Image (cartoon, rainbow, N blue to C red; front, side, top):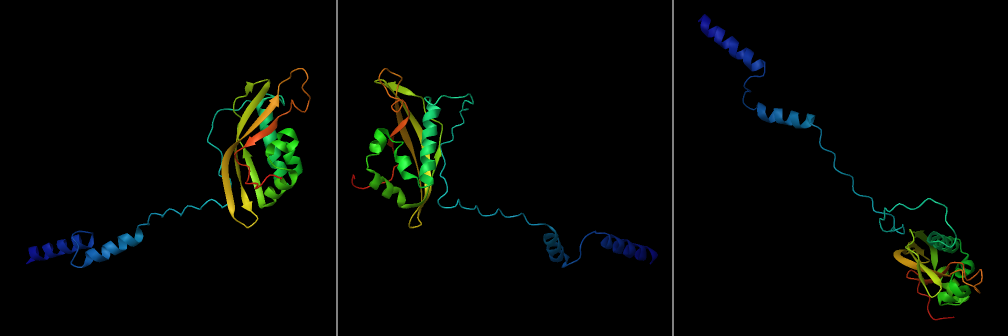
Length: 198
């Protein structure tokens, strides 16, 4: 009788100290464990880039020289493109057109048509990339500059586009004028559709 009582007490102590669970306790234990375990945080949905933002330029990690440069260098040509976009952004379209060769004639449009083309934009912005290598031909130098343009049309539609702008300058040859020796835009793949010549 005493041995049976000792055996019952030992079994009870084992059950209280986390031994074999009784019937019906598995479900309760699982519920407690899952409630206590923190759930993994779900990743936040990606925020879309705002419409009208810059598409950006190609990822070119070539270091750019920090040495001073001359206005006649390739970087000088890129500075002209930067000035061009700054003028367009601020609505100074006549000054922007004057950065084209031939006093603006190389843009392919007269002042009225050029002005009307950019007046069709509520916002017009440009990013300028590192210029390409300077090339020469027939007494002139040429540089191509990568650009990304973006903004909003007057109707509110966002736009963005990548392209290039080509510039030319006459080399320092006898008979060339200071104006000819400056960089001028001669071609752009991001120029808006300007309609008929005027």
